[in-house]
Length: 120
Ligand SMILES: [Ca+2]
Ligand SMILES: [Ca+2]
Ligand SMILES: [Ca+2]
Image (cartoon, rainbow, N blue to C red; front, side, top):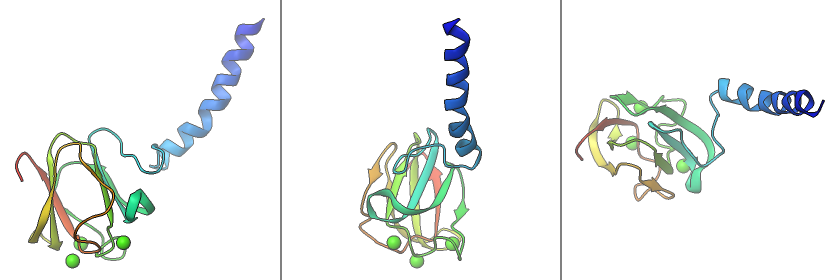
């Protein structure tokens, strides 16, 4: 009779994780899903996670939600993330290498758009 109880417990424990996943916060703070790029308001992957998208692009960070506020980045993809100071990929800032994590951006609070591509 133990097996059904254990299975039931497992289902109960899995439910909150599933709910969180549907809300788009599947990963513990500070980590990005494989293939995604994530950007945070504060250094060390803290504060609002303004960006959590499949690494592709081009992508304009929302003007009310992250523009000129990004302080840390986790690139969980196999491509470069090329960051720009302004919208529409203008004003080159720098690159995040494949699978690179940057706890404190060297150009703090400046990123406004980015694109994923296979070169810097
Ligand atoms: Ca923007
Ligand atoms: Ca910031
Ligand atoms: Ca900027």
